[in-house]
Image (cartoon, rainbow, N blue to C red; front, side, top):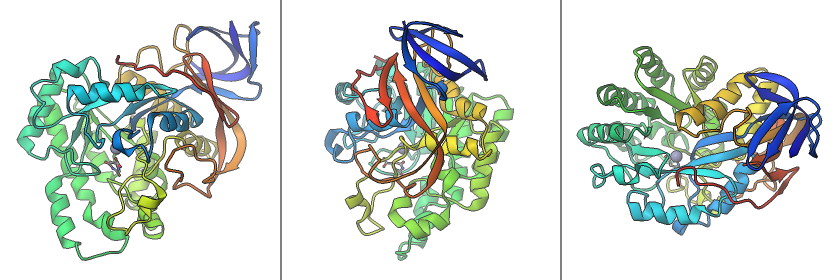
Amino acid sequence: MKILKGATVFTNNTLKKRDIGIVGQKIVKIEKDLTGDEIDCTGLLILPGAIDIHVHFRDFSEKHKEDWYSGSRAAAKGGTTTVLDMVNNSSPVTTYERLMKKKRLAKKSIINYGLYFGLGHENLDSLDKVAKKVCGFKLHMCKTTGDLLLTDPALQKKAFKAVKKTKKPIVIHAEDQKTLDNAANIHRKRTDHLAHADSRPRLAESKAVSYAITCAKQSGAKTHLTHISTRLALTRIRKAKQTGIDLTCDTTPTYMYFTRDNLEKMGAYCKMNPPVRTKEDLDSVWESVKYGIIDIISTDHAPHTIEEKNNDFKTAPAGIPGVEMRLPLLLNAVNNNRLSLETLVKTCCTTPARRFNLKGRGEIKTGNYADLVAVNMDLRKEVTRQDQVTKCGWSPYEGMSLKGWPIKTFVNGNLVYNFGKLYHNQGKDLFE
Ligand code: DOR
Ligand code: ZN
């Protein structure tokens, strides 16, 4: 039996001094003074491996930005043991064949994964065929990176109904295309950095969220709104949840750490869709995380290269990397008393596993898979470009000094990351 020795373990929603016994892929014991093949974890805090429900690991014809090997290594370094990957590849994942092709590419992953399927005009009547093989379905209510979108309200409603039948979650990028078109037209001549945020106004998000809530209510589909960034959308979500509909949402660290001021200074390195917002929105995001209005923190890891980002600001692609920085940023927030450890585990581990039906993951208990991250809460380190494992080679958090870092990551009982070193492992498709 493999023994993780001497750590404090987050189990049953509390911290306990325990050893963890692992046999094969699973946790078999959580007790004091276990003996076996010891892995020294003295002074470390062991949390469930983090689950990231929103990443873009690219591949296909965009492997210069990221591929499944580089992306999964970046995730492992960041304490993430499962990722759910989005659909807007250069050939969007909207057909059975492309889904199967992506499953073949994803075999390079060193961590566990699930794949989404994109909802398009042509596939709404045939979701049954893929439902068992995917973690959920993605609805783009607007245009963003890639050309996948379903902007017609009648088709959006149809999409909710179709997904309801599959019992899988429908995950929504909620920005209203008409509002985006109007704003883009008003600001079309501007070349300054804030023009990007003004062309994708806050109202676009709250409008789309309202319509998604209507569709969720009517269809009864398991609805998840992703990368929520505004106070008004969060107010709508809070009220909708009170009516008892099947609704959850996530935000990403970018909306917890950056505002328009950062966009103004950083330009394309802070350009993403939805855009970063005001300080008022940022405060509301933190508040909503604290009170459980926001259920999950994902990353929307959307890598683009430095060269691509250095293009003319207007044409530079939107999206920033984040999969390896989520835990360091949030552990730092725990150290600063901005976030409780319970909320971190709930939003990054437990709730993602439950909402996306990742059985045996997201919690440390006997019988569960040994997907674990051992963190050093006292280690302070600066975020540097050289340390980034993501193939895109940069981070918007460079220069920040963070306290609290992942030290060891285990996937299905295997050590995949240890003090800066990454090891090979065959990750599992959780929806094979
Ligand atoms: O900023 C973004 N980048 N938002 C998206 O919705 C897509 C993503 C990407 O794929 O680059
Ligand atoms: Zn995304």
